[in-house]
Amino acid sequence: MTAVPFVDLAAAHAEVDEEIREGFDRVLATTAFVQGPDVADFEREYAAFAGAAHCVGVGNGTDAIELALRALGIGPDAEVVLPANTFVATVEAVLRAGARPVLVDVDPDHLLIDPARAASAVRPSTGAIVPVHLYGQLAPMAPLLELGPPVIEDAAQSQGAIQHGIGFFGALAATSFYPGKNLGAYGDAGAVVTGSVELARAVRLLSNHGSETKYHHETLGFNSRLDTLQAVVLRAKLRRLAEWNELRRAAAERYSSLLADLPGVVPPVQAPGNRHVWHLYVIRVSPLDGSARGSNRRDQVARTLGELGIGCGVHYPVPAHLAPAFRSLGYAPGDFPVTEAAADEILSLPMFPHITEDQQVRTVEALRKALS
Image 1 (cartoon, rainbow, N blue to C red):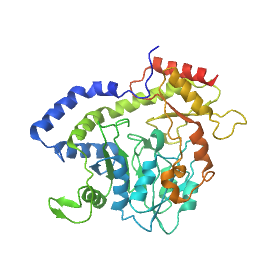
Image 2 (image 1 turned 90 degrees about the horizontal axis):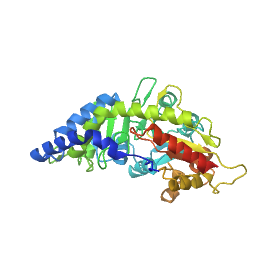
Image 3 (image 1 turned 120 degrees about the horizontal axis):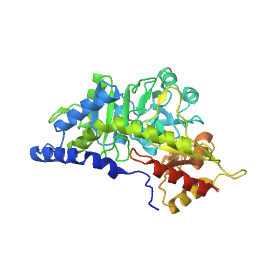
Image 4 (image 1 turned 180 degrees about the vertical axis):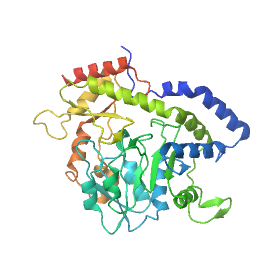
């Protein structure tokens, strides 16, 4: 039986191969490798796609979060509220900016930041709130915006997602174009979008050695610029992103139908008002009755799927607050029970725009065997 990959980047590349080769030839001919015309074109096109006035391309998604924080002047003595259920890069960026991450738990249905818990964590020292639009849908923005501190959206997994018809809410949003994202480059890349010309200029200065004009440096900055070759890739893929997101939605609907009668599995749920882009299709594998944490049924299911040729992933097996890298934050097991329970149960099934119905049927058949 042919294996089912967790993600198939080759299928997406086949659609854009000729266009990207032509773009690469153009860049090679002009040698505009850094901040070439394709970068400015992509920034304009992605800003329009995201529903923002401005976009600044940067080196990667982690830098994008840090630069957004720094553009708002958030650094030492400031606290930043964010969910415990996130990739470590979100927490890492806050620490790199010099601020203190204040983690809160997530809601049990969507595994997105819980607004009530975020509200309880806001203090006079809170410099920003960073909701994470995890798995492909937006966190609940209206109650977070009402809390007062500026909101920086971690939109690395939500390119094209909307909530009540809107795709961008905060002071700034940071995104990643890591190859496996819905809009993926052929290496590391990222961007910050904003509605503010002042914040856009601040991000651009910070990402380019504090300079807007060559050899004139207004502030201490970084080297985090979007490469022109990556901009070529992103422009070609952006033209197809809306279609690819629709294919993901259709695949998610098929999965939900196929999983409807499968005991021991909790399918993902789209929050009211959201239009999901299904960066990941994350199920929860129910633990066996009476099993203790660490006896992990999910891990056994994942191993069996691998043996049956089905790619799968776990996002994320170690909650951020329990990562050794963040021990200095002082969190301990039991601090965020919803996040910790999810870390033991979540399992990401194969999901990409070109996944076939047959591949999904085989995935669910293998899952049924793994659960038996």
